[in-house]
Image (tube, rainbow, N blue to C red; front, top):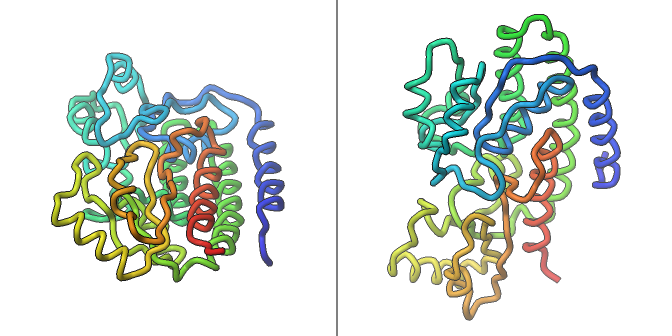
Length: 285
């Protein structure tokens, strides 16, 4: 069955009502590094106090600077959820210095060392993250264990609907080549069989050199790549230079949901937005 966006929105909204109507209860103090993870943890914790988000707005975890309030939140947390040193480097030393009674979930362990840290971009990984967080919360707060389990099951059901919708949205463009600003979408691309040719830069904090720019221009010209995708956190003028003289267009992808309000819905809005932006740019007239 093809799951259209209006139908998906209606079904997901019904689950949101279920989350909102669960009786609120006191819950452990949970701190989450970035917005997509925060959305997943928020879904599991629905009905109690929400988790706290560390990297807010359009800030990037690649160059985030800790504030005194962040350090205080780390010390006050019962549970901290993050990806790992390869993603939130700024958290590595502070977490090592924390008291032993603070539990941290390092999600990079789910993917294995050396893999893409943006693992939430595969709904199956989002399910695993929710299950890992649920188990940790039940240990910390067994009195609310049934609520965490129920929320996790409801979240998994929403992921099934989301996955079907994303596949339908992306089906017409799986063979359309494109480039991304940095290598952040491997989990998403593997899940949905997309044709990403290259990343413009390996490190988003460093511009590619002259030889790399020439090679990218040649790749765009020879491959007929339809789009180059910028990101809200990194939108260099370089992209305009790269597509000059070609038929390629500039689109935008946001793996972190920079403009989205935090909360359980942010994950679904982020994923739907990625699929729709990819399709919109890659579909030819």
